Length: 356
Image (cartoon, rainbow, N blue to C red; front, side, top):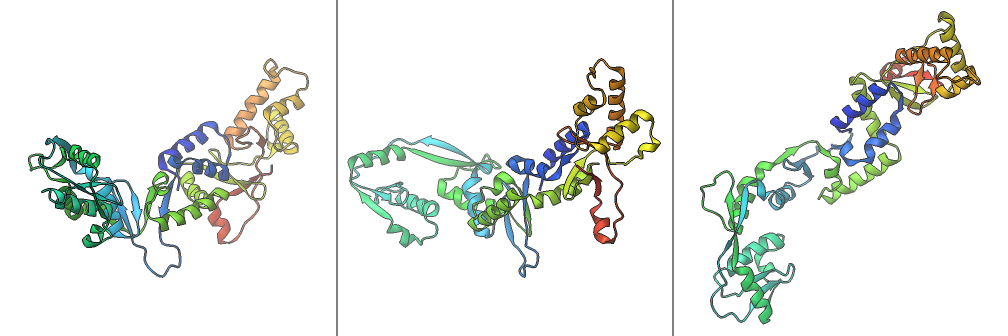
């Protein structure tokens, strides 16, 4: 889907230039930059089961499982609820001949006989390997007797991080495992909402943590990159709502413009306008410069009153939709639409307006 503010800017430019732009190229421009489009995730047509998505309100990240969404909120958004403050305690006192270390993360948990060991073990299990039972995680712990590693643990243990609730500044600070438990059980669930569909910024969609959703979006993005069909379908009603017009040039190319193509009969126009229309009918796709060179050979258009008058008439013709000026400066006259029957013709509302 086109991002609304970027779409508004594009519509403003089309209104200002009064030129016609190819819809497919416009869609490719939106698709080229993540900040220019959004991604809508919804159930496929004909799917038997309803779709359940879990949206993290803090960053619009989407998951297929509530547990994964909750784990994401806990890991990424604790700062919304807590302010972490580091406090100096001084090095631990006593004789220590070994320390426990997590093989997975390299985290030092301290000597098994230290008063903070069990708390550190529970916190490491919760953060490093929550998918394991506590007994299974204990098998991931090794005993290290290296004096340098013991000194490293002492330096780390001389400081502690305490968590202060932002909504309750007078409440006692919490230790890491206490803050994490409160966040998981009471605070983070408020960030998770179950939805049947979700619209997220493209930058978020590109970095979804759910591998299944990420794989589906990679396939969809690949298809859109080859031909942006979904984005084009989304652009059509949005551009019409902004006062723009769609028409077809040739057999298949759809263009968008601020001026509705409006054919005019040359025989009913004054002589200079009739000459311009006759020339454009014989030379579709020409430019202003080519037109002036052919109609006024060897004359300076800037100094020639007749050439300047023709440019004035041409400007009026473009403003009224009697001549279409395309994005690349080429010109063409619109043709009256052929009769079209059936629901598809009424639904499309696109005029075969020009042949270029």
